[in-house]
Amino acid sequence: MKNFIKKIGWFWKITAAIYITLFITGLLLLPYTKTISGMTLNWGQALLLTLVLYTLVSLRRIGPTELGARLIFGKPVSNLSSGLVFSPIGICQIKTETCLTIQDEIPGDPTKIFRGDGLVPDGLFPPIRVPFGPPMTEEEIQKLEISRLKQLIIPPVDDPLNVRITAEVVLVIRWKITDYLLFLTTIGSKEESIRQIEDSAVGCVFREAAKITPAVMLANIGTYSQELHIEIQERIDGWGVELQTAQIKMINLHHTLNDAVGDVPEATLKAIARVKSAGAEKEAKRLLGEGDGSAEEAILRGRTKGLVNMKKALDVSSDVIIGAETARAITANPGQKTIVVGSEGFKEIMAVGSALGLGEKRDRRE
Image (tube, rainbow, N blue to C red; front, side, top):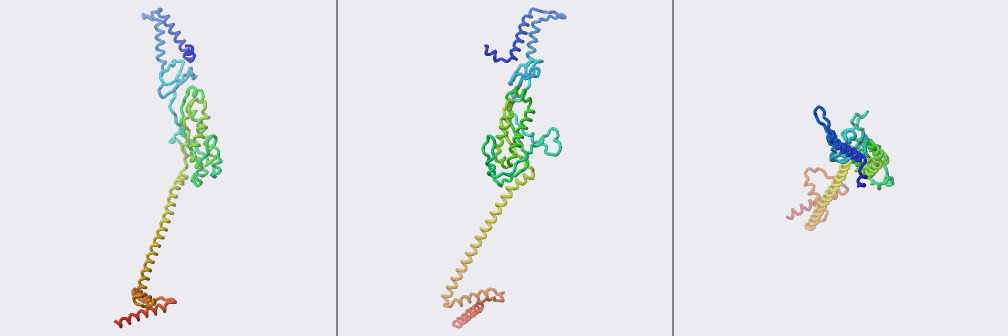
């Protein structure tokens, strides 16, 4: 019994003492009555009835997706869970908040980001523009140290995002309130907590991005998200909240750079297609040349074999056979009016003559 009493908070001890006192007083006043305007009033019954009615109207309900805190004259004194709770009217107030996981996008809702010039209109948020660092060699990236995290992945040297630019960075955090009383007395509200978390998150991203290019951050986005998580966790320690995730959602590039990056795959594919087309054309020409050469070789072999057989059958010299073939070629083209000869021209003409003479002798024999 003593241990149970020790576990009961001072609020319930005081409440119980007041209720017991009033209840006993009501019982003691039951014998006393008073007539007012012909109406008999029992003081004990009136006190007990008032106590019951006051208790009923002091009951409050906290929903299943909420957590609450009891305030006495505006000061938070205890946590409340979902269900029916007692909050004496005029003395206590109940403040509630969601117990579900809260997701916030930093700097704000994508539909409320102002990217124009001048002052940011009310209700909108300026984007987080982060200046990235200069390109780094593979050795420099390997030497780059991130506190408490593993070694970085090295992106390709020819990565189009391996440049020094300023780009928009979007962050996402998921968190929930676990101790509402501590939260109220430490940070006060969700709006203030988001403001301070954003300051810490943006500072972390600026610090790390200044050392690297967007290509390095994108290749290691999980690593840098982990660093962001650690940074925020250290900031909110003691707030009565639990940080579930913190990550870099995306890096928004301006339209010109986006178009240039988008053109890289298309240009690469076109270059590959041109190389393949040129290779195919070269191969086709090679095969065509080999085919023409083989055909020409076959023609020459057949023609040579025929001339050899002709020489043997007619029992004449090679000059006569060549002359006969030359004469045939000339007569095969009636439109040819001239014969262009070189150093062997007279020999060819003589061969033609010999062939013609041989033909006349054979005609006489026959």
